[in-house]
Length: 238
Ligand code: TMP
Image 1 (cartoon, rainbow, N blue to C red):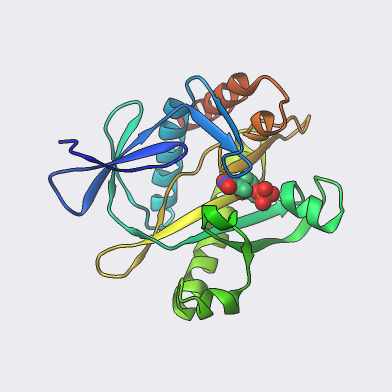
Image 2 (tube, rainbow, N blue to C red):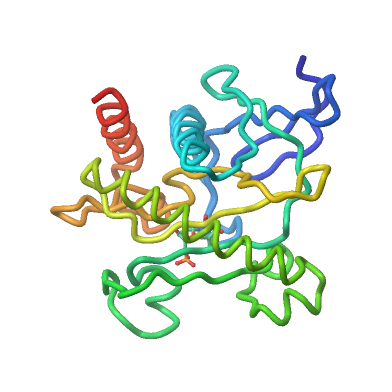
């Protein structure tokens, strides 16, 4: 079923299948940060991210959010709908952290009254720069209707994920989403949702349970991913 590799990203490989509208994504253990400047391996990450992303997308589908997910094929492989990726990283934040804290000179962990949504232009050569809406339109990366839909989907996804992670004793600090267009032009959630693409803090201790442990050399990276997976499993079985 898996045919030629058509794309290799930093954390995943994408293969063609016999069906031109379906692709197979294979999750790797490779980790990068700072636009590929820092490289490493997180043992078992591919398995955790594959399972976690699929479980979260199933949950989102149930809440009425369309996603690219078709079927988990194995511990690292998932069959997905082929999409044209909208070249935007859509970032939702519930608390200050990371680039937000740095840009505005505030502590991490400041609680926002309302979640924020921002866009980065997905372009490795440029280092994924922050982009304002009018520039998204000027560059024709998405049209006005798509931008509005992406924003409302992102906020709805935040509500669903925030409630789920809270039930696991985890604060959803922020996360990054990517959207894609199906053949008929309709938008679906694509890429992945995992500790690589989200900031997840223990609700009580605020211990970081995500890729910041790798980015910042905090140690215990594998253990943190495994802990998030364990809590998700426990909650899904409850
Ligand atoms: P930031 O604070 O560095 O802008 O990151 C915001 C969120 O987006 C955080 O949960 C990590 C995630 N993220 C990615 O998934 N990919 C990236 O390339 C970057 C920079 C952030």
